[in-house]
Length: 100
Image 1 (tube, rainbow, N blue to C red):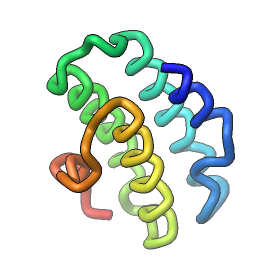
Image 2 (cartoon, rainbow, N blue to C red; image 1 turned 135 degrees about the vertical axis):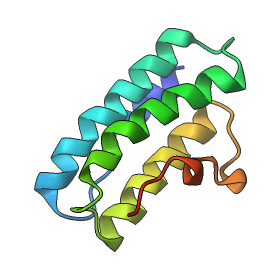
Image 3 (cartoon, rainbow, N blue to C red; image 1 turned 60 degrees about the vertical axis):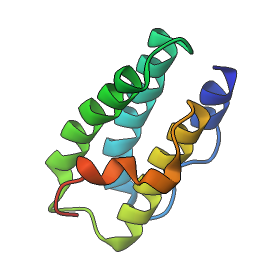
């Protein structure tokens, strides 16, 4: 799970309105911490549940999220998903994404 830690310590979620992204970034950091906590032996459903919980918090900002932020947030979500073995091509995030 070292790749997760490296990801959130890197330059991620940096395109869009900085105030909004500064509110979303901790949600993604918490997601990574949750994924590290459940570990590599977690089932796909357990991993997806962690993403669903993150989306509940992100969706609270749906009125503020514009195209550039949407692309940045989804890129980070799918990058994190790939690190934990989820296939970006399934567009797993779309099932929880609000109206943004």
